Amino acid sequence: MNIGITCYPTYGGSGVVASELGRCLAQRGHTVHFISSSLPNRLMELGERIFFHEVDAMDYPLFEYVPYDLALATKMVEVAQLKQLDLLHVHYAIPHSISGYLAREMMRPRHLPLITTLHGTDITLVGRDHSYLPITQFGIRQSDGVTAISRFLREATLKEFCASCDIRVIPNFIDPERVRRFFSQEIHQRFAPNGEKVLVHLSNFRPVKRVHDVIRVFNLVQKEIPAVLIMIGDGVERSNAQYLVRELGISPKVFFVGMLGMVESYLSICDLMLLPSQTESFGLAALEAMACGVPVVATNVGGLPELVTPETGELFPVGDCEGMAKGALIILTGGKLEQFRAACRERAVKNYSSDNIIPMYEDYYREVIDRGAR
Image (tube, rainbow, N blue to C red; front, side, top):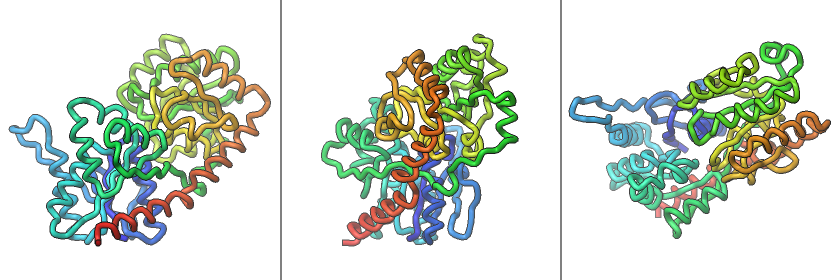
């Protein structure tokens, strides 16, 4: 198949999943065309079957805001016509499903199937805002196919947006050959030269990720055992988190390493992930950690209970920093860390391997294409 993929290129779950999906599809013989404002963060390299088409949006004095959604729709049509795309697959409803809808309408009488994958905050946060609710509903209803990354997100979408919509659950995934634990003594020495326990947080540092709670939980943990914290990612809450670290006097123990293309090299030296989010529709960071043998202490919200089990970590109410710290200490000092590691890897590979999930996308693509050809 000849597939067009649109996603946000920034650091976040939807862009990561879209990039990995495109890479895996190309490995399986499909041709993938990424259509975006810039090269997605996790798309490490292009190749014989992976192409990138940059969207240029006109910056004109009349426009208070650059009309990216219209420029994107135009680029989608251009690529679809030039490369004879079989379908468009857009990730994150706003504005990508609307741009895809416009592109499909401009392509008529040829029908260009449009699939929208919902990732979370496009439904639970942005889409529910009164200024976006009607257009989000419209984009979902007008898509030829809709997928959600968890059962939680599917149910939330049906309840809030489209009770009669057919939404397929296709969960996030990892490539078990690439995302795995390969311990680097050099990296470990850089952060934990004295054998400290290594805790980690990975996100786009938006308010919903509650990075302040990450710092507070770690502060309680490091008072009990020698430990360091690696903060992977970047975003609006980074400066506030760094300020809190200085206020607590733990700067030598907390490392902000920014955005990384290959997170598994850092996850592989870690002993525990902290994910105290306000909401998580799936928890891709937790899955990547588990694939590297890292147990997870997280909040009991959204799709996280579908992913994190008592064998792979612990879940707590939002804001329960003391509970999360106690749970972290039990995992780190209870003598069962290696059991947690093995269970994490086993669950990630057994339930969320790309070998299992990518065929689900391929089958759905064919189903939607065949439906549109009737």
